[in-house]
Length: 354
Ligand SMILES: Nc1nc2c(ncn2[C@@H]2O[C@H](COP(=O)(O)OP(=O)(O)OP(=O)(O)O)[C@@H](O)[C@H]2O)c(=O)[nH]1
Image (cartoon, rainbow, N blue to C red; front, side, top):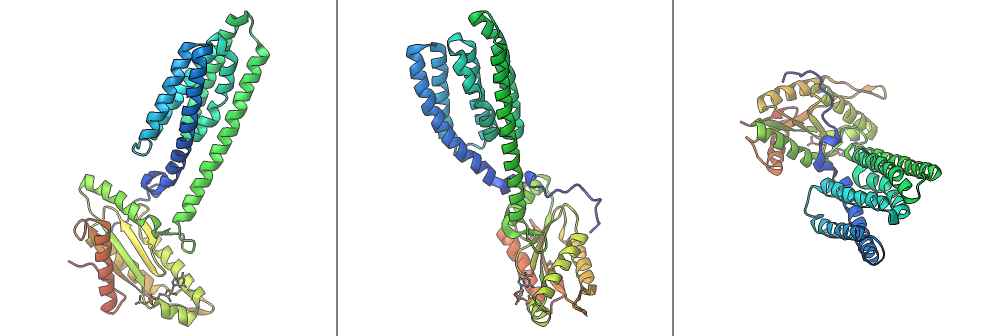
């Protein structure tokens, strides 16, 4: 297979949405709690305002309560939670701003506005949450400057400064919290998806990545190959030279695999001495060339361990999508069967079938 120009790493987790539903699940749970709290709270406020103050605000609060209940019903079924959440924050923010503008609710409105930075960050993340926080902050200050003189004829500069500083402080704190949380989630994702010894991906997301590759290849009518690789007589190597020597072999093999593949290929350690490579846009014939190049290279590899040279070989089985199987289980089983054939035929060889 022709070695392609090095591309920017394609194995970024942000490009693999199916892999990381944990973060979405976190926001979903958070949303569920917040929606219930907001629905109950604004219903109570709506009833209270209906009797005491502004009827428009009361109607707006009732609208928020209804929106929350509809959102709660849709939450488990919609993939567009960001749209729904943005809608919620937009309505809540608008009611707060209107409340601040209408004279009677001026002071209360400001306190409610302070909820915007943490709520936006928690529910919408750094970028979208930041945009919402900025917009409502600017609107809040504008409303204070315009509306305040109309109440008593003067502008309370101290109050305006205090309000702005409090808002900015809360925004900064929420931003740092969300930034650190996102960083930690990313780090945990990387740890969870990698094999600590070789640094390759573990099998946790193999099937997800496979589905992703199928999706992109099906639309462009292209093929790709799944390669299974197993070290020959690894138990014997371990028994003869010790577990540490075995670990060294695993690491050297991983390095050679990385060297012989492109950055767009996916490398997994799927078991003790078993590896899987997904080769996008690669037909079996090309994959066979790569496999043989890799096999010959490994055969000549002589890792040095405790004053002795180690030698090992590998066997491989190939299967091409969609020729040898359309779903993950069928394709993997086919490659595994061919790997088994390679072992049965004497090891140190690749079997690709017809
Ligand atoms: N050093 C080391 N050995 C491991 C690791 N994981 C699994 N193994 C060993 O890998 C060996 C696998 O042995 P087998 O499954 O019998 O396979 P094999 O000896 O390679 O035989 P064939 O595959 O038939 O050629 C076992 O001895 C495991 O203990 C690891 O992380 N490090």
